[in-house]
Image 1 (spheres, rainbow over the protein chains, first blue to last red):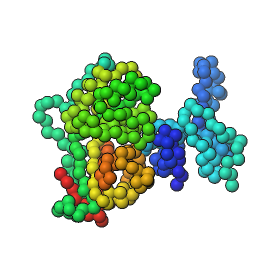
Image 2: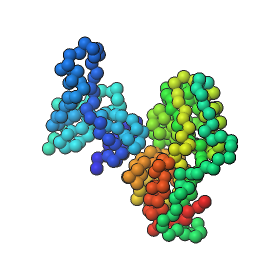
Image 3: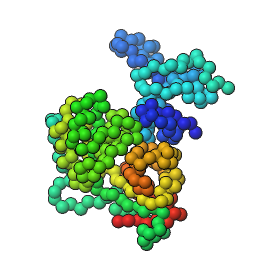
Image 4: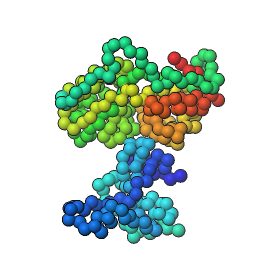
Length: 100
Length: 212
């Protein structure tokens, strides 16, 4: 079980209370009607699937029901940080994390 | 005052009301007397539940709620204010959401007063029919809760006057500690029967008494 820090509830909660919601920091193209199909398809359907540090959205489904962001290592499952939506991560995807 | 058509969902006409647990029966052997019971279970049915949403940064909103209910609005996670007029309570649910519980029959009047007092970006919803309160009292309640939820209910993490929304028996509940050995569960109507049976089953080994 993971212990995940919810930045809204300000405490560690069990993994059971959370739902993963995919990649974070996906920006919607500013002018959709001027965006070509390839870029729009990229925005809608294509997601990163890295082996290493990854920024993700998580939902505290059983608690405050708020979304927040998690920087997680996809191999070791180590959570480097959690932060609110709208904030920027301090950990980079090039970081080593807890790679094994 | 918000420009909305609001109405009392409990009209004065005498219509038979049934709590979500009206059809539930104890399925374990319960004690005949509350004396010596490790857990005393009581449903506090028909309380008025209101969901309040608004911005903490809006000081008029915070002041308006506090003036209407005579209670401080909990701004920190896990906050719970009890007391004031009509034994009301305000529970922190999320950074912009609170659960207000007032005495039975006072929900429409409270909603009306809140709407009269607040302005701008806020919401008040009457959810009285959607959930109910189970009160657990007794020396063994903490042990029962430890069987039901992964949340840490040790006194160092869960003092009196704290309330959290957490996983409870594979479902969801708001767990509140209102006194040293008295806890409340706010459960959804559709889960009420299941959670009631679960709590009874979990309490059986400590001796359980079901109070009216």
